[in-house]
Image (cartoon, rainbow, N blue to C red; front, side, top):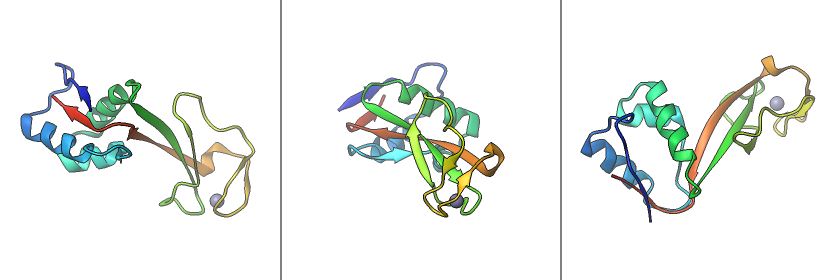
Length: 120
Ligand SMILES: [Zn+2]
């Protein structure tokens, strides 16, 4: 069990902390900023801040999800977060195309818990 202390920069009430603790109660649980924003009724920027801080923990793994225009709803790849953007040309595993332009790609962040996390 990893404890994640919500300091003053993260204004979560006890119920929100409980929901987050429940979500991350198993190793391998993951969350993306828009999911966090929707489930707790937070602004996207607040959700991104929480996941960024959570991603600094050694007990989490952060990934940059890569989406291609061919299917914007399914990630076509993922690389460790913080290593920059994928190199071009980038091979899309969904449509097998070689992508030459970042404008065809979009990105999101996903934080995965390596241990259960309790938000306090
Ligand atoms: Zn594609």
